[in-house]
Image 1 (cartoon, rainbow, N blue to C red):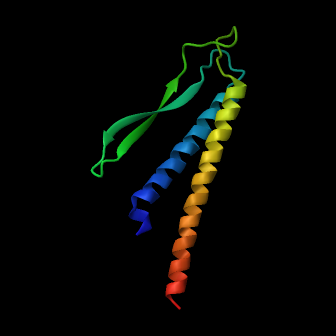
Image 2: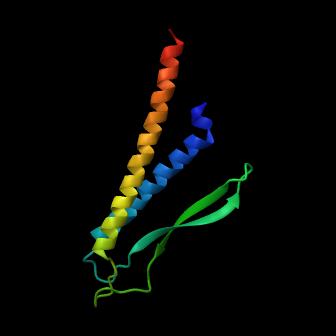
Image 3: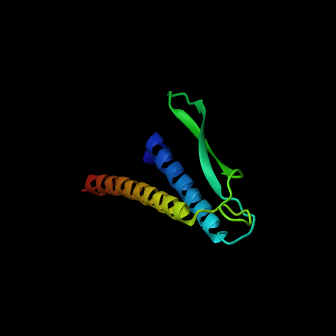
Length: 115
């Protein structure tokens, strides 16, 4: 069944991660004028290889402590955050479209199989 397949799990995990990325960039933009706020970003690390030989990655949030754009210590770059937010949104939308098309395919198979 599709729900237990590796493809579905990849789509499910991809949508969860891109949603988190969007939330992270929105949080950074919301704190654009907060003195001392440090921008956060998401990094992915290879954790291990699974039984099928595929790589498993883990996402974690890091704070960018080394830079400062303004004298008050805030390092949020609105242009960069806007681009990254749009990139995460586009990836999220693409993954949802792919998931929707898979469900449409299964629906067609089920409905045509009952005739």
